[in-house]
Length: 322
Image (cartoon, helix red, strand yellow):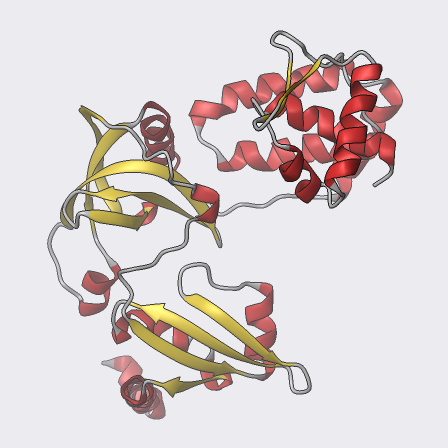
């Protein structure tokens, strides 16, 4: 990044944040603190009202805004294509605002830039699986307004054990939503369990907002959140061949805690944390002979038993007629 780009990026960072330390800017832009001092001086000399408070950092004078920005074709295409994707993922709560923002950006672009953006759009396509849009709208609103929600939840254990009847009634304080591998997950404090949990939207039924509000913990960071604490069983799996290649294309979000690759063979050694062995069984079977369970031995025996049952089912064509 040259100095002109760095100065503009620093200015945008100052406008985005109330106050930022020189040390933080130096780490963000991979430069020295002394360079940050010089850059702040350069911004001040250029007429930007930078306020320096010893021990606290830099900020912009209240009321200062950047003038309108100009975009190169690639930059505008990136923003507009990104908005196309985001608007498909987000619910109705944000869709109207997103469409308005996109329209404003398109309106101020020069004709040649708009033509380039349309050309890029014609070369790319975003395809989504059907989403639970009504639930997503409700949960987006609940997260934004910090309102508790109540729903019946059918967890993986109930599904695997084949238990019938309505799901377990849960009341949750929603902290945020995560989209991973084509699925939406709600992250929030579950009152029934008394801890932070994640819930897959497809398994929620009878979703409704309660009249109770809450305050999301100030130290909760959704971007750094990883499920932990309720997964006591450690599993070690070796993936090889096509299975290893497929895993690299679509890594797991909720299970894997460590990946070790043997570069000479392309084999992957995965360490996973699960609640119980049956939870991971369908995932393991999906890799076929490309996955070998190394730990725990009891899970390896479960996989072998399930494989024998599958072989028995398919061994005789008569089984398909009964």
